[in-house]
Figure 1 (cartoon, rainbow, N blue to C red):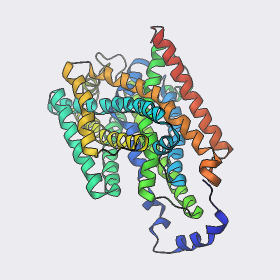
Figure 2 (cartoon, rainbow, N blue to C red):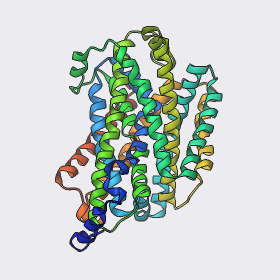
Figure 3 (cartoon, rainbow, N blue to C red):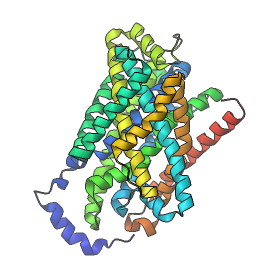
Figure 4 (cartoon, helix red, strand yellow):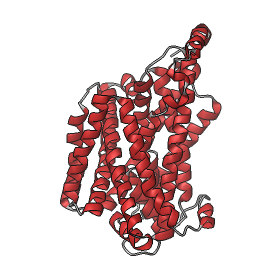
Amino acid sequence: MTRDSATDQGASTETLASPAAPERRLLWLIGPAFVAAIAYVDPGNVAANLTAGAQFQYLLVWVLVAANAMAVVVQYLSAKLGLVTGRSLPELLGDRMPRTGRLLYWAQAEIIAAATDMAEVIGGAIALQILFGVPLLAGGAIVGVVSMALLAVQSRRGQRTFEFVMMGLLAVITIGFVAALTVSPVDWGAAVAGIVPRFEGSRSVLLAASMLGATVMPHAVYLHSALALDRHGASEDPARVRHLLRANRWDVIFALIVAGSVNIAMLLLAAASLSGADGTDTIEGAHQAITQALGPAIGVVFGIGLLASGLASTSVGCYAGASVMSGLLHVRVPLLARRAVTLAPALIVLGIGLDPTWALVISQVVLSVGIPFAVIPLVWFTSRRSTMGVFANRAPLRIAGIVTVAAIVALNGALIVLTASGRA
């Protein structure tokens, strides 16, 4: 895709100079990344981060720092792809694949979507049980119904209203998980030392892969290109595209600073207050330990944050699944209908009595395995002048993308080897 910057520069500058143009205000353009960022603070993150902190204290802080840096790169590239090409990542993949390839690619993406949805619904159900004593199966059904209501906001009131709702829920999530940290006896020296990359046995590698899968979320990578495009529309004006790219760069940075801070706060909380406590291998046990160590008020705030996380993330996950299906199969399923169908696997897991926290951790490992299928084509497309024209990635961003992909593939490879050998 080629754009002639010289031809359109004058007209674009005149448009952007207009005092009435809302696009002059970068703050007005912020929003899509905050919707995508919901995926980075879902219940799967809670399970993975609390487990890592309780079992290994500050050892794996570096995983969250690195994963968040990777997330900034891939989410910006996803938004960039949509704004420059006028196509989402699933649409570009669907346009370039034969039918069999599209079906296979869609199948793996649906498995990832199912793992995502399972984590989010289970997490919301656990929160309802913690706060109100609701049975897990009933709680899962309630989460599904409420998520339908949230999706109805997007369908009826538009994306901007949906963005504001998600921002509000993200604020609740942040308060819910960061509040406990303010009264926790964090060893800040050990926390800083945790930035140095290292492992302690195969279990720490498994948890690192789970944390990576919970942080760099495949469905968020697919979705962000569609979110940015739906919000801002396609443009042939290079000056407007540059302005939107600058706005989306700040959007991504701000949103993921919030999400990354929440994730690190969870791990630090577990390392400071849950290490050595009984029963912290489950979210319910962790909540009980937090309540005992820090007081019932902190326990309630934690539960509210977990509930907001489940409700928001399952809505965003369903939105992403619909975008992937539409792009790869050229089939549009109403969001509410898709929500009803994809709720079933999570309810089955809750109904048959599997350990919900371990199901959450395993779901994040599945997501980690699915990440390369999203980020490899993303880096490939955004680095090609035939696709991006003058907006193709320059060397620093291209290198950052390649390093990100290499790190993800390496960690997933280690995970597969450890699992196959029975050491994970």
